[in-house]
Length: 322
Length: 245
Image (cartoon, rainbow over all chains, first blue to last red; front, side, top):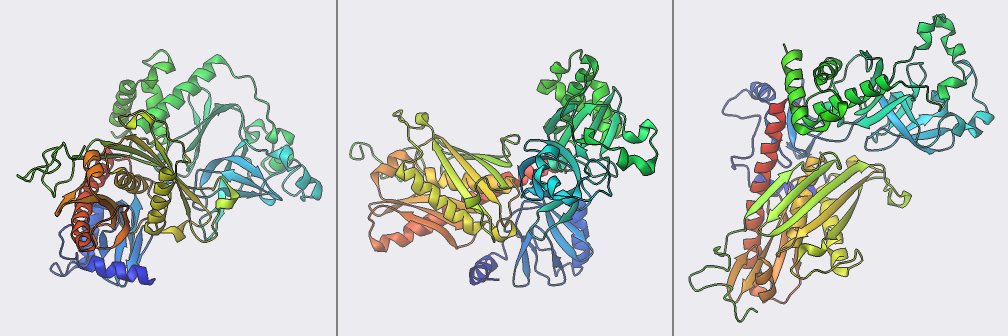
């Protein structure tokens, strides 16, 4: 810690008797461990500069900083504990990429042998030319001509879904689309919600009633599209899937989308926005429940009213939480 | 103006009925513009009203902004033409506005734990909607709340307050008329500590009177910190109750 920090530490020390500072390892109670567990269950809020613990037995995680043996919260949020690791999860914040996350991104820049992708994180993610499937199959080698025609595959403004392959030490993510579940997006509608509202689950692509597919990016980017048959459903053998994937996976052409499908997409979008408005976590069951609830309104346009949003979410919470 | 209006009555009451050590009516709100920004806040101190939007930490818009080891903070301050009694448009290049931007930027470059987000940028957009003295302090307080709302790690709150000296009397948290009648300073402290993040005094004042002004301003800062802390906790609690976390 620098000099400035230790000076600040001394200044803070004077406040130790202040009742707003909340010490976890309270000696009067004797059992610091029990105190923390109680806190996590009680979901106590800490704010920047608040003492989290003065005991050196704890490891300090994200959302904390330390001065000597004392650690303080650096964000407003709740304390979470994993074994001996104490961290503070902020109430709000940008998306923090984790390996394996299914995300949606938008190409912002085409570089040499890589694309820069906006995924709503603190830094832009990189998508290496080597981590995409090119027409002609997985086994195909990337040649210099591929480097030159990168814009033919993905250009600025294109949307794609991908998986986080690695996270660098500075927090930037590296993506890959080496599966037919991932790749360029078309035939649909894009919008965003705060990433904190998306519940991480095993799958993030859903086939919803009404002929609509949903890609619910963990980063809060959402894609609703007309349901299309995946290559696997067309009777191509699983081993030859990648070879069958031709140039159409990078096509920009939208297919014909019927009025009914368009209306369903609008209804789903407004249903998710209603959940967002009420700051309720978004998952498949809730989206479908909100969609069903919205059917009492004839046009999806009616769902933009705030009282309608509240009504729908109230219904959703009643039905999905049992 | 000062000669005609009694700034501080012999009974110890000011123009708006406050005592010397009372801050103006303080109202703040956090997460006011959740769609358009990562963090947002509104501050009202008396009749001064400031809106703050924070965007980031995000990918820098300009390559020149990229710092290899820390986040870069840029502050934009817009003073609305209708914010004072006389309607006047102030350009972005106005030297007073530029000066305020750079002092806010310097304060928060030290208050934010900058090394956690290398090669990224935080944009702070401040809108002064109404001004009645203490614009800089309101801007600093609004920025603190908006950064907290954005989930940006900070060492502590940064809270600011003004104090002025009329003859031998210290007055806390001046309004516009009081500001024009006496020398005053703006102070920002790191949370409830005695550590000073900013001290701005643009007028002449006798050296031996400075200390009492600083002491008053500091107690005002600590008071404002508690008010802002209450609001953050209230907001956090309501989010928890809604089960959005």
